[in-house]
Length: 304
Image (cartoon, rainbow, N blue to C red; front, side, top):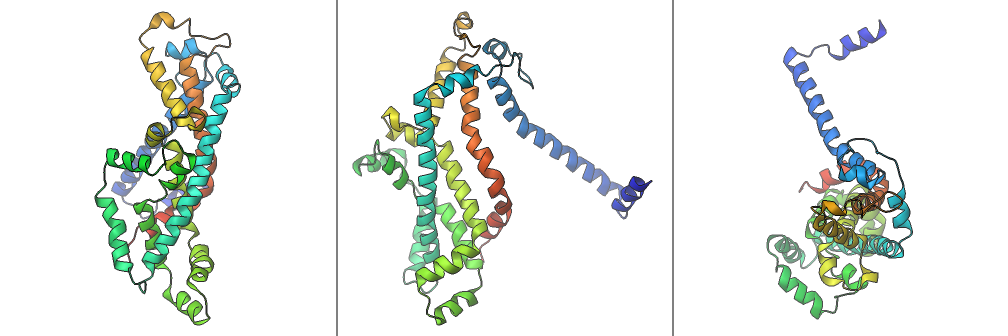
């Protein structure tokens, strides 16, 4: 009886067309959620299944012939741990460096009294319209000594014009009276930035930090071009190498049994296990940043 009253009150005042539209939206939303979650669940299930079951396409939703052999093999491989540590280093150090540079540039771009404000805004926007291209950029990095260098990979990719524009727009939305009051009290530009702008801009800073972290974690192209020493390569290079190796042997069905190790894993299950390991940092970090995501990207994307 109680549920009937709630249901009647909830839909009171809605037309039949509005109810149908609401049902269609909810159904589409459920389909979208399933479409987003199923690949993740399949990758996890395949990584926990035997190699024979995966190659024979017996895995659909849940693991078949449950085994942790692929993970045991990966955890015993020192090269993988080194590449995983490299990925964390590139992500955390790179994100910290990118945020420092981006916040300082965005602050200067938001200050109308800066002498070269208009030129700097045009200069940053210009890099979004036109780029030098892959080959000139590669030669530039090599000539600057950034090839095969961990520090070069962080410094060379420290600026994103799109992210700087997002931070600048958020800074522009802050009340100008706060800056005027702080200036009257004798605050310097660095104090205004660190004690007013940065504390009040946590949504956009968290959002852009997530952008930088995901970009670094998922990147492999420039790492494959510039990092030649295996001990400096991130896990994405190892994963790509394994993917290519698996694709080259996928038609050779005679190797199906030969490739199965004693624990039950093969190249395919190893590939899925590495995918799961590479997703763990994103899955851990995203829920903490997600609550700032909507506000940060909304206010940062609006030009006042």
